[in-house]
Amino acid sequence: MKRISHKIYFGIILAFLYAPLIYLIAYSFNDGKTSVWKGFTFKWYVALFQDAQIMESLYNTLLVAFLASLIATILGTMAAIGIYNFKGGYRSAIQNVSNIPIINPEIVTGVSLMLLFTMAGTMLGFEMGFVTVLLAHIGFCTPYVILNVTPRLKRMDNSIYEAALDLGCTPVKAFFKVVLPEIMPGIFSGALISFTYSLDDFVITYFTRGSKFQTLPVQIYTMTHQRINPKANALSAILFAVILLMLILINIRSSKEAKKSRT
Image 1 (spheres, rainbow, N blue to C red):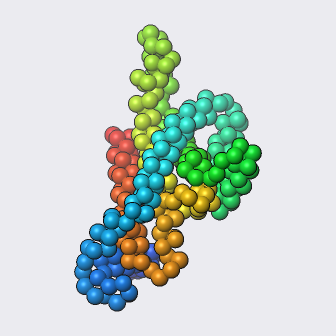
Image 2 (image 1 turned 135 degrees about the horizontal axis):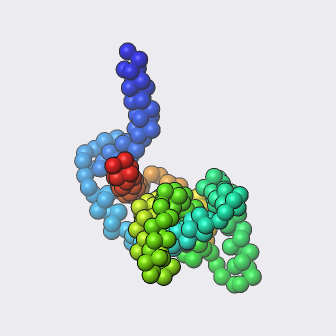
């Protein structure tokens, strides 16, 4: 009886969390513009991909997410290796500092970056746009890479790296031949998480984008200022599907690594 009640409780929680998403996805196929169901259609998806402004926002979002995750993965991996090589209390102190952007509320990060970019723009003569959004995304994505790569470094057997040096490898060659393959699962997970968070970010992007640069989350927010446009339902459904797919890939990768570590 207790187990059944736990399942019912879990089902209620899932329904509470996902019922709005199911409703949104279902009504993205509604033939009408209101909440009254008038038939099944794909016309809002067709209209979505024919909208030049939305397509430009999609391109901006994918470009920022790709570049931010790529650069953040490189920087985060280098930072994780540097933190791992620190000794004593310095390692834990720097590790805690690197986690601050994750813990910090997005509204605080967004406003502080906006003030920084505004001041820098006044001094150097530039406006906020693609570059400022990219820098902001790199800033909040890098800690997630550090968080994923560091545990892989801690689990690595240092004697393998030392053996590679003894067998004639240079430190650089030993890193690419020994260390990099060992930490690659963490790098891959960090890159996927960075891409997902960058793709989905609204708050920080909203404060650092300026007046001319637009991404998909900001575009959706702009579309909801007026009467709900059915294209916003279709756009939200696609964005949700992409992020869900990325999370599934991350979980599959993590489960495979967990099985390998147990065997």
